[in-house]
Length: 142
Image (cartoon, rainbow, N blue to C red; front, side):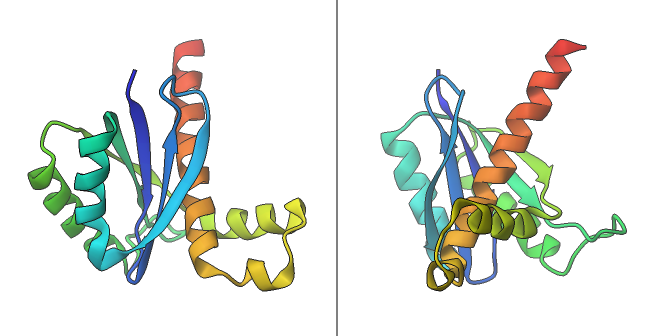
C-alpha cells in the first residue's frame, strides 16, 4: 500500500506529514520552505509511493475562504500538473494550529521549542492527516 501525505501550506513554511505504508499511523515528516515545496514533493514521490495528497484548506470559522486559501488553490494546481497521477483532496484545517499548540503543551515540550513555528506546522499537518484518516474510517462504519 502507498502512503498518504498531508500538507499544511503556509506563505513561508509548509508542514508535511505522512502515513506508514499500511496507512495506520500519521507522523510528522518535516517542514519545508514553501518556495521549495513542489520540488520537495516531486523528489519525495520519486523515492516513496504516495497514494494521495491531503491538503489543508484554510477556511475561516464562518466557513468563508481565508486569506491563504487562494494561494493553496494555486499551489494545488501546480501540484496536479507536476504529479498528475496522484489525487489531491482538500481537508478542512480549521483550528489545526490551535490543536498543534495544545498538543505541544500537553506533551511537555519546553517553552523555547513551542515557539518553533516549523514544529507547529509539522504537527498541524499531522493533525490534518489523522483527522482525514479518522473521517475515512467513520464512513466505513456507517
